[in-house]
Each structure stands twice: as structure tokens, then as C-alpha cells.
Image (cartoon, rainbow, N blue to C red; front, side, top):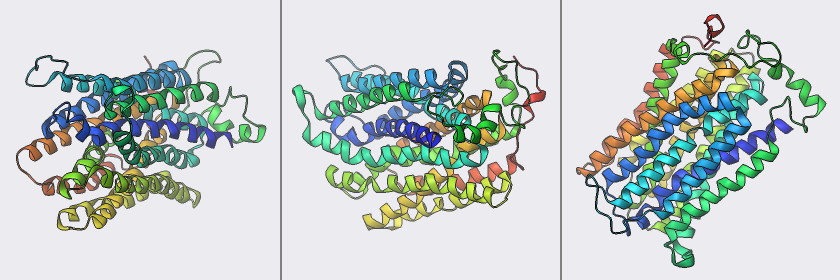
Amino acid sequence: MLRWRIAILVSVAIAISYLDRQTLPWALSSISQDIPVSNQVKAFLDSAFLVTYGLMYLGGGRLLDWLGTRRGFTVIMVFWSLACASHAFAGNYGMPSVFGLGFGVLMLATSRLLLGMGEGGGFPAATRVVTEWFPVRERSIAMGIINGGTAVGGVVAPPLIVFVLTNLDWLGLAPWRWVFILTGGFGLLWTVWWWFDYQPPEQHPGLKAAEREHLKPVMQGDSELERVRPPDGIAPPAIPLSAILGFRETWAVILAKFLSDGAWYFYLFWLPKFLLEAFNLDLKTAGRIGWIPYAASGVGCLCGGALSSWLLRRGMAVNGARKLALAASAALMPWVMLVPQLHSVGWVIFIFSLAFFGQQSWSTLVMILPTDMIPKRAVGTLAGLVGLGGAMGGVAFGQVVGYLRDHGSSFTPVLIIAGSLHVLAFIVLCVGIPRIRPLPLSTIPHE
């Protein structure tokens, strides 16, 4: 059916975004031969991405609420693809250091800032697509499919990047530069596909009568969330940001995302370095096994959403279905605390695979919460706020990791903290959101 094809289309975009953000962690050892990068500098580069990623997660959400999904996602993807390709031009070029940072590092940081700025609109766009194309009972499955793109990008990244690093030196350019050029090109190709294939269901020429009937409640607006409907031809009124932030439920989701994404970005950005340093693996060996946790994360994307939807079909209320699935996801995360006691790389990969599975099951469900609580015309904004919280969690925890590693600490305290963050996030959700329900925004004056 057309709506599932749309979900796959968006999933490919998310896969490209995760391929793009994995380029630096996997190519770092090669980049360091031209541009020296310490652990603290690595954390600085990661933070450069996450700061703008988080801010534009919010800004991208507002942009999408203004431009609409089709035009907004086009602008976002073109921007981040060019930003990814721009990493290839980083170098010292004989320039002096600035504030103790080499010119090449500053060029990389600029590219990371731009990449984060572009990719920050990806998941708000995905959330809007789900809201436009799927009824409530299908949304967690649809988001699971879309979120599965994170796994596809993560699975493809290690072997692809290692292949480029060890085989491509076209035109006299260092192989690591081709990593960024090629991955940036993938995003531009996707943009063409998106522009010609995506329309909202009300306007899509390929929507058949049976599916149109199935989507009629979505196109007409959910009765609880879309109580205020403007006359035909008039844009719906914007909901003030201050109104959205006036609910403790909003803050609970943001704080939960801050905690859980602190752990996730550590896994995402530091796993390659952990495998290379803790087990003295060479790049090819790390690339051959580094994709396995990401494959597990893809299964987690589907399982979390499927479990919640199955519980809804069995008659459970939204509150119970979402929270039970979130609890099951969070329960898988503390196992990473065992990693420092393990001496087998196989067991370490298995434990990280559990964590990646649990994290992406969790992430799928958390990104569905805005659609359960906020009208369609503002869902991009709340999704953006949630993403901003997650990115700031990644910045905060990443800086802690970089500092500890450059000051002689092992990965043990880091893994203990990371293993506890999802459990804390679940407690925050339960306390801050006693019952998942539509927020009474329809009673609040509009801008």
C-alpha cells in the first residue's frame, strides 16, 4: 500500500542521515594522519554536530510546520548533503591555530555544525509524515519502519567506509575525503526521489480508493487532537511555543530524551574508538563486526513499535501500550555495565547489540509520544523540542567522556553511567506523564 511505501521512502532518508553522521567516527583514524584529533577534540567535534542538530531539531520542526512536509524536507536534505560533502575540504593549509585548535579541526567543526543544522530537521519531518499518512493505531509501526533507517545506515556505514578508506584514492585525494563526497552524493540523489514521489494523501495521485477511505479519519483530523479546524483555504492557526512548554508532560518527554540520548550518542560516536582501543583491533576487523549492533538496533525499531501496536489492537489504552513497551526497552540497557568485565569481543558485541536493540525500540516509542499528545499542526514543534533535549544530552555526556578519557580514565565509569540513563528516563516519563493523552491545547489562544 502507498502509505507503507512512503514510510520506506522516509526510512531511506534516515538511513542516509545515520550513514553521514557515522563518517567521522569511522574515518577518524585516517583523518588523524592529516589533522591530529585528541579525545577531547573528538568530543568537541561531536558536540559541534549535536548543538546545531538539537537547535535545528526545534527550528526544523517549526520550518516544517511553516513550509509543509514536502518542501521542508527537500530543503533540509539538500542542505545536509552539501554539508556532509564539505568535510572533504578540511585541512590545515598552513594556517595558524586558533584558540589552541588547528585550522583543520576548525574546518571539520564548521562542517559538523552545518551537518547538524541540516539533519536536525530529519526526524521532525518523519514525525509529520507519520501524522499525515497513518492512523493512530499504525503510527508506532510506521515510526518503527522509519526509525529502522537508523539501523540500515549504521549497518552500511562500517563496511562501506572501511572499503572506501582502504581502496579509493581517486584524483590524488586521500581516501577519507571520498568518504564524505560519496555519502553527500547519496543524499542529493534521494532528494530527487522524494520530490517526485511525495505528496500528502489529500493530493497524492497514486492513492487508491480503498486506502483513501482507510485514511479518511487522518485527512479529516483526529477528533480529539484537531478540535479547532479553520475554514477551507485558511491556514490553521499556529500554537505558541510557550503554550506547548506550559505542560509538565512536554518537559517530561524532553528530559527523558535528554537522558536516554546521552547514552545513545555515546554508543553511536564512541563504539568504533572503543573497539579499536579496548581490543586493539585493526580498522578492517572493526569494520567487519562493527555493523552487528546496528543490525540489532533495526530489529529493535520494529519490535518496539510492533509491541505497542499489538497491545493497542488487544484493547489496551494508549497509556498502557506505550509505557509497557517503553519499560521493556529500558530493561535491556543496564547490561552494558557488564562490558568492562568481559574479555571476549564476541560477548561485548552481543551486549552492545542488546543495548542498541533496546535504545532504538525506546527511541521509536518516544518519538511517537508527540503524535499522541499534540495536534498535527504543531507536532513538528514538539518533536523538535524532544530532539533538542536529546542532542543536549549527547553534548553533555560526550564532554564527560572526552574529559575522562584524556585524563586517564577507563571506559568503566562511562559505561556504568550509560547503562543507567534509560531507566532514569523511564521513571521521569512515568512521574511526568501519569496518563498519555491529548493535551488541552485547543483551549489556548493562538498566535
